[in-house]
Image (tube, rainbow, N blue to C red; front, side, top):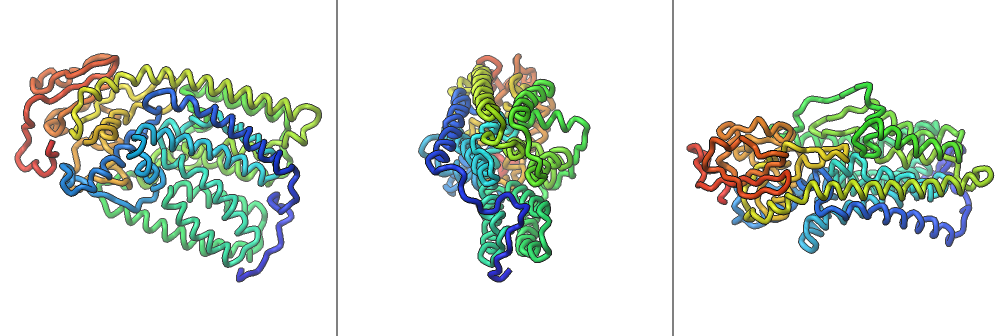
Length: 525
């Protein structure tokens, strides 16, 4: 490499060409995409609480992280803080914004910025591949798909950075490899890795797949050697950091989950619709008319990225090293990559180009309106929890007993971790907690680990037993169920405190009766 300027690959569609549109027209195209993106964000701000499964856990992690800065915190003996983790971006943004606008608004603002940035980054990707940036509005129906509904806030925040890494770091490096560009490639990879390791891995893999499709020479392939070394170093650090704690989820077995339903599940992951049939119909109703109107490009190089996304959805494992719901989250990249294979509207015969763009605009607006209705349904389902918060004193311990983890209008279990909003908004701790999970900002100390563990108990609250699960630890028990629970009928020290809709708050009214030797594991409140 050493300063050598490699000749451009004639098959590479990214070869530098004179701009085909004026700067003013280009700016109007991006403004058009941004406007539709802003409209598409309206549903996110309708409900009080965002319909994002893991978001309350992330927000509670940052609240506890900030609280532990005080050595006098009542939870200082139970938890330890971690500052260097491979999914820092979402947490860093929450830590930055929450003190000023609150955890709820901060979560919504980060998700809004991330989704809008993904849309604009997709427009830039299309432009780089000599297509029309306005085709990025094809991405809007995937705004509230699998990563959003499951509340992967850090993943969403890092996703546009992954696209920019691919465009402005990886592609220039293998197009014209120089020492400076390869060094930048390695440094940027480490930065992206600590923003979110999965985004870094996906971006590097898709860049390598694209490079191989261009049939590079052996000299060109050598530029990947420093990056391979960097990937090995990052992988060793990640495995060592989670393997040092035998209580984390990283020791869960590999879950490959190769089933025949992966194709209809892909449509569900893209759209976030609760039924495979309705999701398949929605995706086909979006893609088929656009393909008919515009046609598809015949050069195979444009199919590399979407083929990679499809192969990942069909063949990648579901869980590895404690990272669950692995391949599903990458569905957010399917539509941006699919847009690359479409003929640009300006090259479509007759008036098919304007018709295709008009269809996409109408589809995105109808889709946004439909999601606004779904968010209103979610608001009605979740508003009772706000009533419970009014009856809960701050900085206490609570246990989530969630019998209704799903909403009928979403694919994901959007209520799975919902009671953790108490810890995010009022302080304290809600179990099951990410603090006994994988690599997060705050983890339980080994001697303080509760009997109630994340990724297990929240799916089976009916198994709760007072002695088995150390019920004496908790002051509050948040129940989400159509009817009152019978778990506390034989426990006079636990009384119903508040009730609103399907939300029930039970409180331990007597002092805790803890087993001998359990003082270290209990909280001062």
